[in-house]
Image 1 (tube, one colour):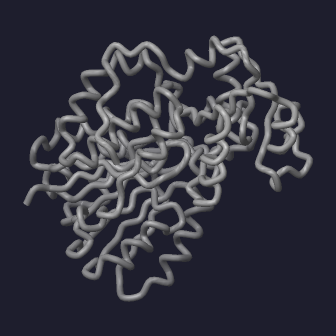
Image 2 (cartoon, rainbow, N blue to C red):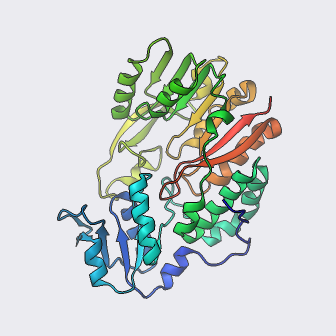
Image 3 (cartoon, rainbow, N blue to C red):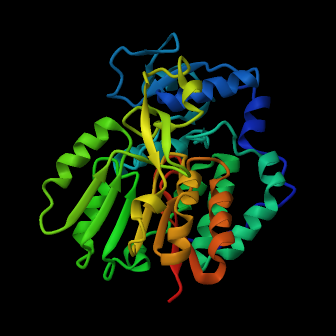
Amino acid sequence: MNNVALPPPDIREDLWEMLRTAERPILLYGMGNGADKLISRLATMGKTVADVFASDGFVRGQSFHGKRVLSFSEVMEKYDDPIILVVFGSSLPQVLDTVFGVAEKHELYIPDMPIAGDEYFTAAFYRENYEKFEHTYELLADSASKTLYASLLWYKLTGSPGYIREAVATGDERALLGYDTMKCAMDVGAYRGDTLSEMLSYAPCLQTVFALEPDAKNFKKLLAYAETVKDREVFPLCVAAWHSSGELFFAASGNRNATLGSETAKLAGTASFEYCASLVKTDKIDNIIQGRSVDYIKYDTEGAEMAALEGSRATIENEHPALRISVYHRSCDLFALPLWLYEQVGSDYAYYLRRRLSIPAWDIDLIAVPRK
């Protein structure tokens, strides 16, 4: 990946401003929650969507927001020069190849949509927080992290598939996190056991794992997987990591759209699919660990990462575990989470950024490694 500088601190143009002034028809490529959000976002700018389409072979007579979902072939026959906005997520190579192939022939953007919260990544947002972005950039320990960070910022401002395609740095995460020597780990946001399985496969000394998952359906599958594990201690907990002990409403969707806390109420009636809200137990990681020595904590809590970090402050300060933190659910995550951690432990840690290819810019991990 080529060296990329941060966007300038006085940048004025962004994807949203371009769309606000666009006169050509706007087409949505995909459906679901991302499309719901984007349609609402465009409406605040006085813009409407001309049509919705899916890849050839995926159209089966569906309708979305009152429009018949067209095939790619149909929209290409209907429109000469549209603006195409991708509103679904994927990391599947064949899907990515299709999207990038369309981008080579047509004007296509992949808008950055916050998974949690209402704050969009605009030029004004970037200007307002430039010093925080710059500080985070300077904290990063290697050139791959810095180039990735700058590419991500450019992508978030422009929606350019070129930047998102280049914003990749991966392959050394297990080495950085010390998989070879870790003995006790926490999987916070364990989903159905995906990362738990990886840990158990590649960490030969790992003996104890605490796996937290608040979604009842996912937890059931996590529990079933944990029961198949032999010769290791796995403690599945149906609890949400938070900054305090108690209960909160949790909107479970079984996917990346699950959310915890005050935002749950906002979802009712706003999405094209159904959320199932229920009360879940919350607890601090510090309470769950209860003074045990822990080597590694992974945080992927769909926007509740800050609360989970605050609830593990004592564990981080006392045990200095390696950390892997998702920093893509909220627009502020790329600076707020690294800077919070730096305020707690400073130069006791080295900070890296890693990401595998997906659309939109998901799967961004801050890897914080204690300096031995």
